[in-house]
Length: 304
Image 1 (cartoon, rainbow, N blue to C red):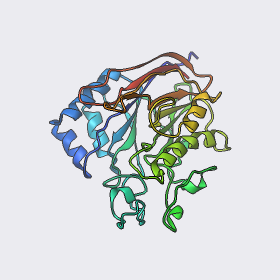
Image 2 (tube, one colour):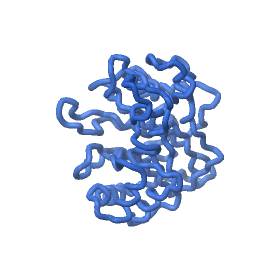
Image 3 (cartoon, rainbow, N blue to C red):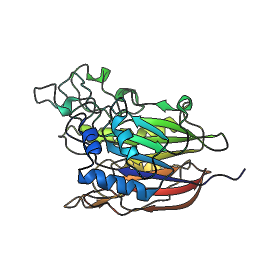
């Protein structure tokens, strides 16, 4: 049987809102400019499998479902991925005397589910073959670079900010293609303890640890998401990302900047699609940054 060609795409939408339910409200109202832009951008990408980040999570998947329904060709299979954002830790993680602020959550968030991830797929999703690694405690990552934390916080603080998910989709020949998705915290917005910088590094280092372990997914697989660090420019500890890009089990076929933050930060490469060795890549590129957005959607055509 001839392998099927698949078009994969990733885009950080920045569709997060200031409170729960607001994204669903705006999608249903169809009056917000960024919603109209998102619909047009997703339609133009025309991906077989699309990974989105920066999209608020709700337990029923209502916001994702409403966005999907607005598309010219809605996807038959949806997977909203629950993030650790906004989940109370019970600790004063930033040391300002309060325990109930966005910076004190398991990952920064003004409410549980802010700025999550989602997968829209034309291929069936095989939940039995997937795995959710988002509950891993940061301290349990081999070689974890933990910053100073309040006593007891190591017992609850998870590594993943947005999440580390292994989502399996079924190919036409019955095999599974594993999508390894993540959106690391930015290596900034903290103090000399460098909590975000250390966490950003370790969120990418997780994939190296997983691929070296007995829990590694079988090929074919694709790492897809936002490491939030450039291998050469900008802030952050680049060691884990550089190791990932050089890993002989992966292919790095889509170089180039993926975001324009403007100002001193400027243009950086922060988003990645990294197929496992053995997958044939027939094309890849950056779609234009949509009006009013910051991130390029990136895409890749593969024969898994």
